Amino acid sequence: MGGVCCRPQPIDFDGEVNLFHFVLLRCVGKGAFGKVRVVQHKQTRDLYALKYINKSKCVKMKAVPNVIQERRLLEEVDHPFIVNLRYAFQDDENCFFVLDLMLGGDLRFHLERLGSLEEDVVRFYVAQLSSAIAFLHDIGIMHRDIKPDNILLDEKGNAHLTDFNIAVHFSERRLNGIAGSMAYMAPEILAKRGYTCHVDWWSLGVCAYELLFGRRPFRGRTNSDFTYSITKDPLKWPEDAEKKCSRPGMLVLKGLLDRDTSRRFGCKPDGEGYQELRRHSWFKSIDWDTLETKEQIPPFVPDAKKANFDASHELEELLLEDNPLKAKARKANQDNLSIEMRQMEDKFTSYDFKKMQRRSYYPHNQHLISMATATSSGMASSRPTTPANELRVDSGITINNNSMDIPTPDTDGIPQDKELLSEKDYR
Ligand SMILES: Nc1ncnc2c1ncn2[C@@H]1O[C@H](COP(=O)(O)OP(=O)(O)O)[C@@H](O)[C@H]1O
Ligand SMILES: [Mg+2]
Image (cartoon, rainbow, N blue to C red; front, side, top):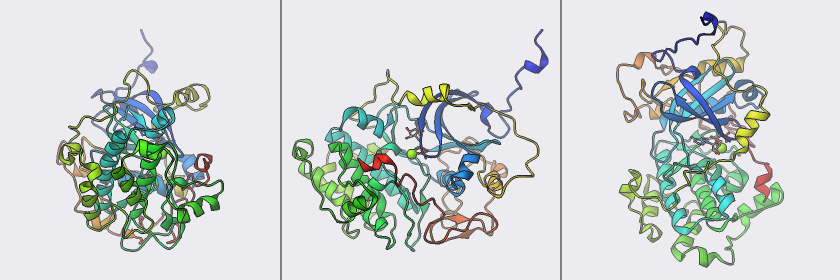
């Protein structure tokens, strides 16, 4: 006779999604803001990646607007080469994103093991990522943090863009806030004269160069050396560049790393830059139609027998985590929350791709409701409604005019120095 108190509570799969719906499996990643682990949905048995962010840490790091923004932007995007959002929810301690699981590892992991990648592999990733970037720009989103750490492979070897932590909506008005990771930052961000989505094409160029040659095009020991290098140094090629990369490949790198945004590859308006890039002779071997349906066989297939992520994340969780993740019922009383905690409570709304259509939180994208991931209709009542008084700030962040910090045009409300000074950037 088992004690009634020990019997697990039945799980209400028809109710709002929560952590009880998932089996927690191993840890696969850690970033500036969150930890990531594999989870399995208890009812469907589908595997996902769970990214979770501790709410108190988030308040301490002044990252509340970022996490809300990441949640909102992710609901808007749905693309074959983006790590798409499937569920979002929170409990008293954490905010949770349940994302497509990428078992092939991130490109930083592979780069560190292999030293550099073959030209046809890099070409394949640049093609897939260009398609993702063009899609984002088309719906008015700039990513601002494209780097190998944020490019993930699925088990077949297709590349996907992730981490929308400092992504923003852009409008005609240019942004000024310094955001991103120094090594991948476009010169116009550092010049502080305003920038727009062109910065993502530059970052893609830095990534492609680094993946091909195993070193970055611009470097510096200090912040100001780095700034000088990015804004002034001529683009140099490693001695063995011609052995590793064809002439058309170098022309594409040079085109992406053009400081003049009117000439930079990808930047021509209305998607014309992307179309031009697609027509470049370097991409002759790419069939763009089957690329987007993932019918092409990727030139590098991650080893399925090995874990494609750093085992230290799992060890760290086992040995050092004093508050391991566990599903917990919510406190009934949420009255005495700080302003920031209340913001998260109200604005980090639940999302369930099986029950809801994706929707936009941004006035100019309201038409953007994709049916692609909605499996049923008539569920609108469980969806949050767009507040009529939502205010769009030209810096690119949309906020409610009641409680969230209104960012000054200079900062976009985003921490200015995310990873800006991290050691790895000074290599
Ligand atoms: N969907 C996913 N599938 C597998 N691994 C992931 C997934 N999302 C993130 N990761 C791993 O976790 C790391 C950190 O995730 P990321 O979203 O970049 O968080 P942060 O904003 O903290 O940098 C990534 O570099 C990657 O290694
Ligand atoms: Mg990241």
